[in-house]
Amino acid sequence: MFQDFITIKTRHLRFVKTVSDSEIVYGLKSKNGYATSSSTQYEDDVGKPIGMICFWAEKVRAKSCAKDDWKKYKVSEIPLAEFMENWCIGMANDGLLIGTQFDQNLLGHEVEPLDLILELTSELKSIEKDLNFKKFNGIADLEKQVKEINE
Image 1 (tube, rainbow, N blue to C red):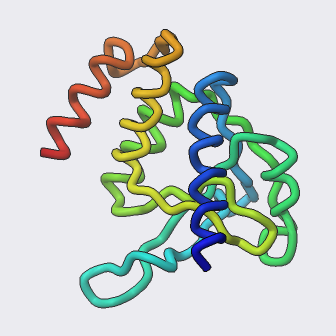
Image 2: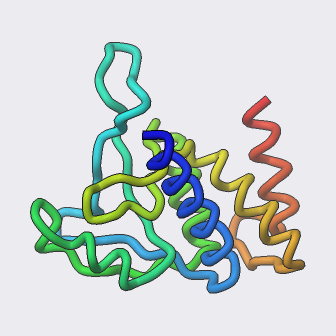
């Protein structure tokens, strides 16, 4: 089990680095929306697993998960800036989690959307890359506002 945790965490860290470099996040989309799952780690106030939307850093990894319940889903590309300012913030407001780099057994990392924004802004700053947002004045502004919310 501990080995699984290390593998999942390593894949998540690679997700952060890869999407920061490529500026693309992949999801699985059907006519009914994006591929969702339920958390195995977090529950809401009444003990129900929290909902989660899954995302990948590589198109091929996302495509490999389009089977079973997700077999009618197609890979969808999301620009990183849109993912951070619309998806992550929207999912945080909706009380959802983000699943990263899930594998074919539906094992992956579960993260709070605002925490993921902070991980991404940290990586983007470390590689000296900024993004053009519609609602924020660059990654420093987004990071500052997320940190204020998290306090």
